[in-house]
Length: 427
Ligand code: NAD
Image: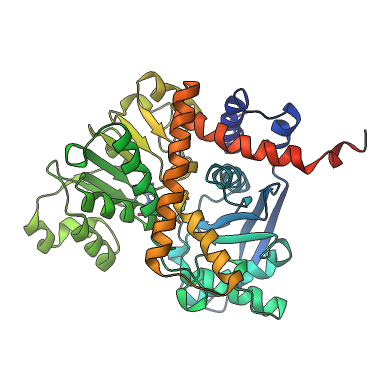
């Protein structure tokens, strides 16, 4: 039987459990999601026809608090994918010490096929279907691939209509006008930048000497690219689903972002002559970008991009996983043998859920923070956890991924123990 994404993800758990103070019973419990919901969402299309979409919401583990995790709109969304993403959220929230468990949701579709009104009906229909499964103290969704603050605003509004009360704290990543936090839209990319920069400092590396390639130029990838560029790193290649661009002397990331925003696909960057006048770009495929001779490789698109099939081709010294699960467990072993230092998703992209937590706190207190306060808190919190994970890796002589899981698992294990023995009364 082919390994599912979830079984692949839980192999990381087994490895870390050898080093963490957690019982076998607790480890076994963590291999299974607490609850998984599959729903059908009927949507009236603009032409009057009816289409039914399949959606999911998985609450993986809530020992440390209400569950938290994004909602993804993508053709590849399946129950297996959502379960493994919910698994990662459980460990991510624990790794960076947020008072949340892990969850995830998604709808199987290509959102680019829908009009804005169809997308709104679908988003509201999804909330109609999962409303009893979520709540500010139960499960708090957020954006993920191909969802954004507009979608979160519709969803929070629909939940509030169903409950008959305004319920800002049910969803994070909302528009600022509807209770969103300043800085949430850029938090994943900025958080990843803080982690990369702090790790390079610890390794004694200077930004000007380091080249970077980034696969995926969306919300997360484009923001991390911008901050690396501003700090002096040489970003030499970026790509999106349509392909990528490459310049060995470094790309002007602000120009690329501007063009991407204007033309919505990367290919237009080198088709329109204004940017081509600034600098020469070569085209590059998404497969080629993974094997570029760079110091730092940043997968920031989808899961399962580096597998046993292509891990041998990786030439980067450092990988920072901005996407969730871009490297499979088997590829991990190959990269480790090649001496590649890999910094895992559950730390690198945790800035998004950290600022989601800040948003939830602001919604519940009714006091809203300035952008500077949000970014300063993000910086100090994520660097503190990154430093602890660095120390665990050095002390136990394990990879940074295993260290991050040990760190997370210690917190989850402590909470499971402190919850007591209710689960054993039936013996
Ligand atoms: P997004 O939808 O804004 O961007 C995704 C990017 O990936 C786009 O540029 C898209 O063109 C590109 N892409 C899609 N398929 C590709 C392919 N086959 N090859 C190369 N590029 C491809 O999504 P995002 O929010 O930036 O999320 C990207 C990754 O980061 C996902 O794995 C997501 O789970 C993870 N992540 C995002 C956040 C967040 O707050 N946005 C938080 C944590 C983790």
